[in-house]
Image (cartoon, rainbow, N blue to C red; front, side):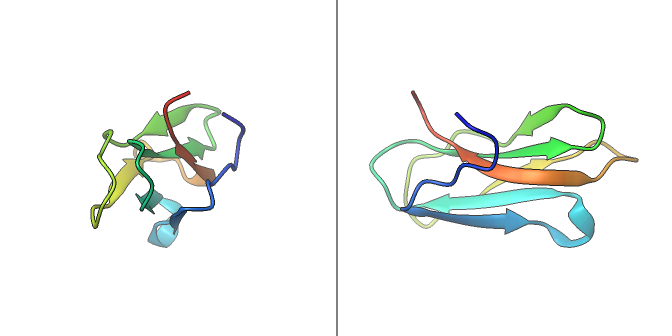
Length: 74
């Protein structure tokens, strides 16, 4: 998993005010939103099966997102 990686079958982005990130995938693999926050830590949304579902990952209060990506099983 590399920072900022988004598989071609996925879409996502930062949430308003850089509070976290979102991700949605159409692949056969489970996925989850992932976000790196300005405290240096990574946070993850729940694992979801593909389909018309969106995973959200949030930064803690007082921090903002600096990058986002999509996490898939290795």
